[in-house]
Image 1 (cartoon, rainbow, N blue to C red):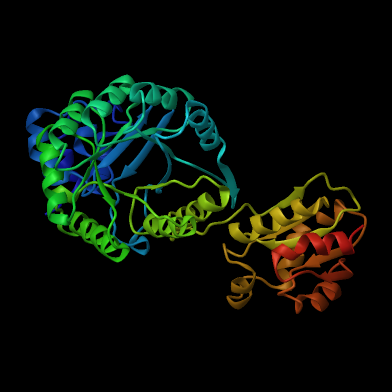
Image 2: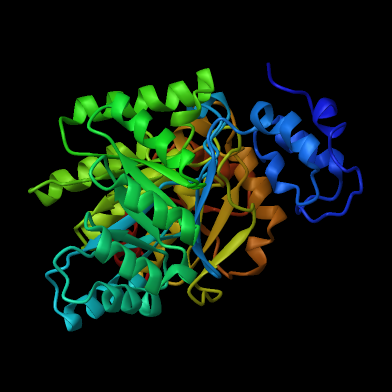
Length: 444
């Protein structure tokens, strides 16, 4: 049975030293009870307290950190099977595989491309999380690993089956805490020994769930602290089924051999299918997804899926309600309004920027709903739009009285014209992508 915060608190030092990062021992105890922290995060826990609490209070899925310094990625410590039960806490990291066949110049160029792979979507910056370096076949595995660690702005994953190559590479960059990927029954002893000795995270792989359970337990028994369950190959339906079973066993049954985050290496001959399956595995339920494609059209769909899945479903995704300036608008610039739903606002903002027509965007509070949902849910009205325009003093910023409204709300036109100083209401496009052509054509 899970321990309560008070039961955990009784076994803590009660010094409120803050060394765990929380203000009090009681706050720490409540985090442990909520499965968000491990008792081992308390540096002053006595051996008696540790033995009394560690197993009972450990999170059902361990938190694993890859990397060091300012290049750290955290995964694991999830608490629910499905997002709607609470939320997913740590977003999937997308890694790009760098083949051993690359020349040194091409290898450095690929790393630079990974560093620059950055996209802005809905106000957030999306980036590649890992550089995965293939070692088997490389002329000098240690040198290749050093180059990656020095030039990459993201944590490193070392990929290989040969214990000698892996040891040379891991030893060369152990301070960077790379992930060793992966141990199977042919090399577990060697890989687990080096991971335990260097205190590095280790991915383990089994041909089926029974073998994966054995690999995980053996790695833990050999002293490996940070373990990741690696999945690859086989039929996608079987892999997704196994990922789901492993996650359910950890979260619902407290089955410790599966109480670790998982990862998937996508090996598709077709790049489109690789992207599709990368997005699928990000949703079901991998902490890391590895692909070989590096083009924006290959990366962005997976990143978009991760961003959407890992938002908090209990918190509306909103922007601040205010008047936004796009470009450098003047008193002659157009005025538009939209809702405070993030996806709606940033879609409109992006298209206005693309039009190269400086403009004002008045954001109306719709409690985080898009245009049609807000209208259907009675969260937006012509009266509310007029009040928002007045509150944001939009009329003081322009000398005209023209207002562009969403094409999905033409019913607002007459009422806004009749009840406000905005006497020329222009019905805009229904879709954000039509805004650039609309502004260029209708606003000189």
